[in-house]
Image (cartoon, rainbow, N blue to C red; front, side, top):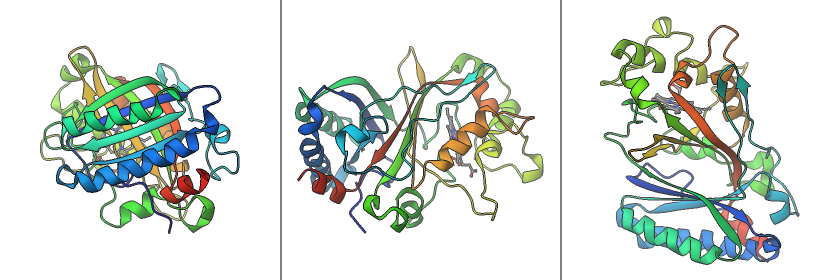
Length: 305
Ligand code: HEM
């Protein structure tokens, strides 16, 4: 199996920095080499900063892939699936490059982000930066633990990484991101019962509702989807809260061996099952959405020539 980028399946951290870049015109002749160097540098930094669990990955936007790597495209790489129904929407805002940096130290992340920007200077323009943080015991700002049902141990790699089904891109991962802005005053006015019904779990103890008690509009009801043969459509979620006193929310990140799971879940949240949509969307709004592929280290090295 080709070597994957360490940040894709990494365990949670205390701090994250997400850098979104658009490539400059003509940069595609130089960028494959710079990106391979960047990914290698992130791996070396992970070894050097193991004490703060540093990790990272670089992902290429679905709309930019063919310009950067005209020699071949991951089988299922598609633009971000934007959906809209009534006042619910998942907008798409394509970006060429996504650099995901995380560790348990803000200063180490800041140094890494500075180095990423230095390496990409003149080749790509930084269009957005988001700094995320762990909130309490890995909760979203709504107060609910986020990530409980994430795959664990070796299963994380099975869920997140492309395998032999697309051999040229094995070890890579389909990445979807969405920046959600929460309406915190509205959320905080809801009763505990309404909040818990909205998620489908209890808030403090983080216990899943029994199936029969789970409303059709509960978030986990809408996203817990299965194939016809009964296997679950799993995602490895690497989301973290972000924000300041003006705007707060969740930077949602999904890593998966196929883009189908995210697409089906997002559709189920927004369009629902004909009767119920995801009521979490009453309290939060996605303001951006992008689809990427994070190739293996080997793919990037080969493409760099
Ligand atoms: C579960 C929060 C968006 C997919 C959860 C849970 C919380 C949560 C609190 C329950 C604990 C857990 O298992 O992690 C949020 C918030 C979101 C958001 C605050 C946005 C503001 C999304 C989106 C997707 C998604 C956009 C996919 C399209 C999932 C999945 C689960 C989950 C697959 C596990 C369900 C299960 O198997 O029980 N989310 N989520 N979430 N969420 Fe979200």
